[in-house]
Image 1: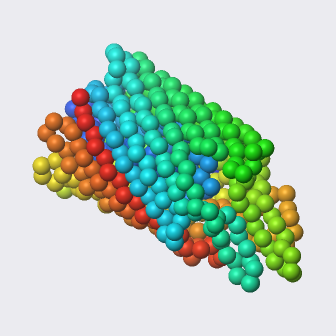
Image 2 (image 1 turned 135 degrees about the vertical axis):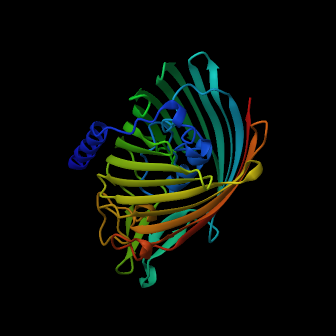
Image 3 (image 1 turned 60 degrees about the vertical axis):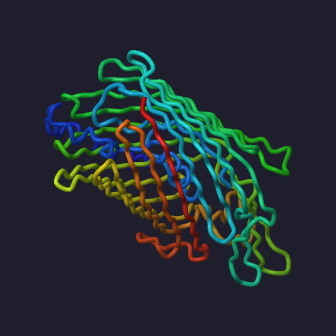
Amino acid sequence: MKRFVLRVVGWFALALLAGCANVQPWERAYLARPEMAFDADPSEARLMRHTYQSKEAAAGGYGVGGGGCGCN
Amino acid sequence: MQLAAPPVCAGQIEEMSAGVKYYRFKESDGRMAVVAPMAWVRGSVAEQWDIDASSMVDTLSGASQQYVSNRGGQIVHALSSASIRESRREQALKLTRWFGDDSVGLGWSLSEEHDYRSETFALDTRFERHDKNVTLAFGVSGSRDIIGATGKPDLRETRSTHAYFAGITQVLSPTAIVQGNLEIVDGHGYYDDPYKYTMTFLGARPTIQYDQRPETRRGAALLLRYREFLPRLDAALAADFRHYRDSWGIRSLMFDVSWHQNFEQGWSLRPSLRYYEQGAADFYAPTFAASVATGSSDARLGAFGAWSAGVKLRKVFDNGHSVDLSAGVYRQKASWRLFGAGSAELPDYRSRFLMAGWQMAF
């Protein structure tokens, strides 16, 4: 797993160094639309992820925090 | 309280909003049913301070898997004979302090049920760079769980989990944005399921294997997310991909895609499709010829593929309030695993959900 994590960190560093589009604030009207948010409805996302987590072994990637459950 | 994905346009939340959600979930074949109302409030409470608070109560009823047996030559996942009814309460609170376009957040959550308690503290921070075209996010959290079991008054075990998060969000164009996140989780303590066991019949008397799992679990999840707005269609495409692996030998992939279509008068429709698959844990097996130190037949540790589909209808009113209604189905099958063999003995699993929400802005 150590190799997997180091590989991912390397990809992130490359992505950061590769530069990005320079979109000006006045060009971001579409990006500011609610449906463009990564979690447009945080409450819905939380409920769905909790459901998936109770039936699947994998979880995570969305951020830290959040309680567990004794989902037997 | 999860560190929310960095907003596309960074900065303090400009208005307060509050809402309620009502969630119903039902498994097939007389298994579990869940009803979960939730209330939340989020927004700016003072100059440079945001708050995000929520409260939820799950009420569970029905039967869950209790034991696996091969009596009669076939693997059977038997449900508990007694129907249960229990509730779980979860509260979460997060405060965020803004320093210009950068922020620091402190989060707390508590989840309690009669045989389980989990408390989490989380710290996160995010930075905007390159004229806010790049957002860097970092977070760390610690959880402490206390586990008991109905009918086992002497059982009181603990588990500690730490999580570490790093994410980068990059604007690609005036209509597209991408995010990559890495989360590493390190847990130590009690992971067994005290309610489950396996009976293996090789003769008249069965070998009994109680659900016993390793005392450590280290996992990593890589999540890639893409969003694009299509102005000519007045629609947005969302696509997520996640790869997960852990020290229990579990490898999984997840693809999630949705299409948000806007209509006149504030109406929108969002169909979605999700595929998930996982390989089995190293210590998973449907039968145990002899008792082992770590062994489990829990279906959630087997190898399978799963598809889920849903649709959400939403109406936003002129005053900023909104209502929404979602419905979906979820189905799991061993044979649906695309990148490897499934655990053939696993029973098919089906469930469906319904969710309704109301939100007001003030």
